[in-house]
Structure formats: structure tokens, C-alpha cells
Length: 390
Image 1 (cartoon, one colour):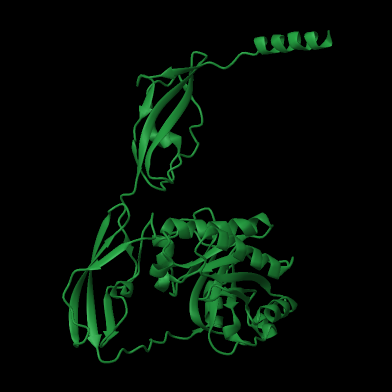
Image 2: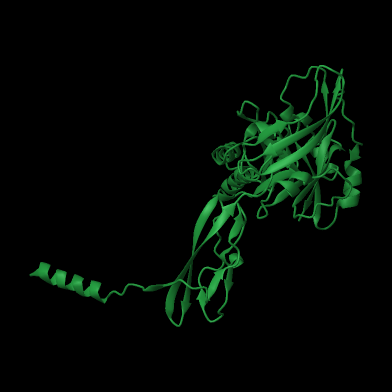
């Protein structure tokens, strides 16, 4: 009897539950797609690609992001309400990669006589979508003879987008690897020019500065130091900077604000997250005044990594979000050129490297590293000088 009553109650509940009716709209009377071809990885919302013809209808999820991560056709379903009835409008968009590879190194190259390495790696190039780029050189040259050669590089990505680059190749008997020394920059001069109510002046350091007298650094006017916590070697192993533990202890005793950075050559999101955990484990709950910075700058070896520009942005994002989850503030370090051409992490704070007296970088940045030939009491030799904007 109880079972029968239960069944009757169940039938009653099911019978009284109304399923939402959604009508299919096969017309273009109310709305339609105004943009049907989308560039891969474009950051767009539904509202960016639809044309609402009838303002009386109420379209759902206009601010939802459109997934543009995969090439090919993608069905779009748009739900809207009209006169208390719910409709769905279906159409499709095509995700395409139309962006050719980018060359981000100089095109005047000098090599020694009988050079035996791959000429394709003389220039650095990459792509927004793929790490696999076909490189061909369609020119006559003789590396066993001194002279200057005009090379034509043809770079093709997986979507058959082509970039043609003209390179001047000079074959010489001996390559001069000496570099031009930048002028010495004195901390007191930077302090006098840039110290304002909304700024602080400080340094960034690593084992290259060896023993530092942080008390003298503080007395000279510095209020913070960003120190290298760790570094990833070319064999992909992580290690703690040999001076890190000493530096963070002595800097704090001297009353300086501290932040840390990791020098990384991570090539996957998984590796970046593991590196963030390495930093967090090394910190072991240490309080920081400034961010944990992701420092990826191995651009000269970019060709060998076989990753895309999208990949490197996702890699950095994974690191930053991992440390943010643990209560710290993540940050990206990079130079002006790469911030303008490759990085697209607009939602994260930036530490800008631009060695000049006045930067013309137009993006947002929280810290500006303005030189690497700084001099200050307490540090033997060159040191980077930074401005922190509050």
C-alpha cells in the first residue's frame, strides 16, 4: 500500500513538472551573426559578433566569451526571449589562423668562415598559433668564402601563412663578440630625479652581486629589493639562487621591502605550475612586501622550444595564477619590445625592463627597471635599479 502511494505521488510530481519549451528560430528576423570568421585566440564576447535587429527581444549571456582556441567551424547557439517565449538561434562561425610568423631579431648577421650550424637559427621567429614553423632559405651562398650574402628566408606556419624575410649575411674570418659598455648610472642621481610621493627606488639582485651590505643600501636611499629566488638551467633543472637565503634575511633586517623572482625557461603550463610550487615551497610561508615575479626571457633560444606565442602567455598565466591562489601577488617581468609584440597578459601586473632615461612604453607597469649598470653604496659593481610606482 505504501509502495502504491509512493508511485502515485511520483506520477503526480512528474506530471506537474513542466519542461521548459525552447522554440527554434530559423529566420534572421530578430538577430544574426555579423561576424562569421574569427581569428584564432581572439578575445571576443557574444555581443561582439551578433546583430540584434529587434530591440524588444532579450538576449542571454551577451557578455559570455566565445571559445576561439580551436581552428575550424564552431556552432553558435544564441538564446533569447520574445513575448515570454524562449527561442534558440543557431549559426556557425569559422575560427581561422591568418597571422603569419613573426621575426623578432635583427636581420644583419655575422658568422665566422666555415660556419656549420643551421642558418635558420640565425634569426628568431615564432607564431601566434603553432611552434612548428617551416624555414627555407632560397639563396646562393658559400660559407667557405669571405663575403656578404643576401639571403631570402621563407617562413611558413601550419596554416600556410607565409613570412618572407631578407637577411644580410656577412662571412668573416673572426667574429668580434665584444659588447659596448653602457654608461654607469648612479643611484643617487636616479633617486633625485625619480623619487616622488608615489614612487620608491630600489634594486633587483641575484648571486651576481655576491655579498651585499644591505644596511648601506638602505642608507643610500633604497627602500626595496627584488631578489632572485631560483633559476632554471638549460638542462631544465631548478635550483635556489646561492645567495637567496642570505639576501632575504639580511634585507629584512636592514628594513628593506622584499620581493622575489624566478628565472624560468618553462615550455608548458604544467612545468610553470610546478615552478610556482617550487617558489612557494622555498618561501615556506615567508612574508613578502612585493610580488613573486615570473621572469622568462630566453628569446634567443626561442626556435628550439617549439611553442607558440599563445603557449608562452598561457605558461606565464599559469605561474602567476598559482602564486595568486596562495595569497601572494604574481607579476610578469619582460622588456618593452616583448611586452609590445608577444605578451598579452593585460590583467596581470608588469615589471618593465627598459634601459633608458625616459620610457615610452604605453602599457601599464608597476615597476620599471631602468638600467643594469647602476652603482650604489653596499654593492660591489653593477646592479639593476628599479622604480616602484605606488
